Length: 263
Length: 274
Image (cartoon, rainbow over all chains, first blue to last red; front, side, top):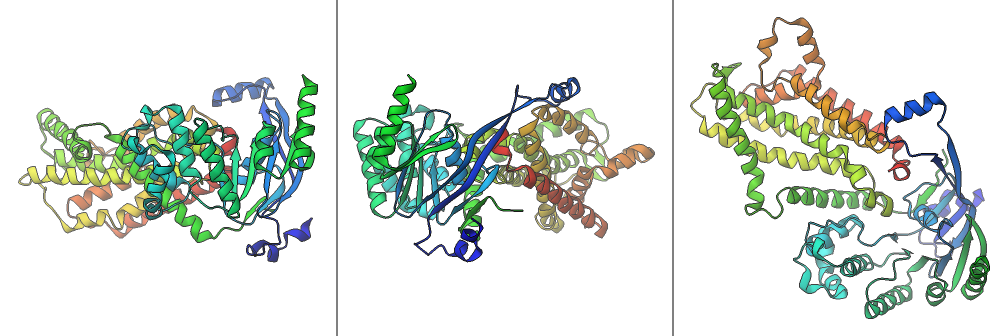
């Protein structure tokens, strides 16, 4: 395992042969207290009474896989299987308890649409704020502004504060800002069910065009149809372990069979 | 230590991104203060100006003494408040900055340092506005004892402000991290802030406690005392001693490093506890 992570291969981000993402033996444990302790007083009372128990929660258990450039991989699993935690680790938001993740390229995680929206600010201000949070400069955003507004179909509402937007409008604006990039890796966490049918179609088209331009896609869902439509291969996670990985159709069938069995 | 997350992104690009984010957060913070008001941005100067006028009226009527340490009393207070409020505003907003932005912290790749720093810098922007308001008040009272515009006031920007900003950032790092784990700190800190306020000669002059040895030593260990008196001597046209410079930079750099170390070691756990 160590020989894969030698410094030469690490710094070589241009080598297209190497996988874009390497997930090696990643484990994640959460220390879950019996109750949430929010104050120092509570903490010491519990400590003195000897009631400071923690439950160990294994969210991910020795997960390893590679994602190559240009691939689209779906991650399937039921609620609480550890899908989102895995994505957050690959995005670099959480650090795994054990194991290692290597990412050779730029990553844009779309874990929640409109994270960081300021409801009191107008649509226009939020586009710039959100763009800055995603790491883009003001100049870049000025160039992209028109195409973002056009994609969201919200041109009329740009000078309105976001608190007056409907939830569908918010999601549309969030999606439009987020996909207006060409990252090496796009990570999507069950956010495709956005807006009405025509807009959803538009989103699917946008993602397909990103895929054509060489963006690698990592999609998390509990919905097998979505994975089947967008991905070539899939990974099924159950109770923090990889249950099955391979061609999307096969994995989806196995997942659906397992889900119906448990009912 | 073995690295658990390795990515091949240029450090320069990362730094540039953080800078962009900080700038837009500061703009948002300043805008949000006076959003939907008729006068809008004018309030940033008008608000401290009105506040200072109220204080001037109250104190010139209540107190028989017209000056403290050779400076007209309202201006004496205003200069103290302007300096103290930079610390007050920045730490109070930075305290809750991580918790208030938990949506961003747990869902995007933003570095957590950005939030307390953006709050400190927003307070610095407000400091500039208060500074303008203070100058307007000084213009009104230009004939009074010790009031006048001096070149030393430019020293408020360099070398004074960088040291003070470092100090505020350090304290903000410590407070915002602690608040993630223990929400009590908000209440403890609001009391502690009052204590700091009374231990800082904003409303009284240092000569008032000349005789009290304990009070004097308490004041000397209060870093805010040094920052406030430094600023005030600039307003009075005095160049602070070399020792004063050393003290404000020692506190600034020391507090920044201390705060940053604490922040750095707990930052990986922050998304888990928030």
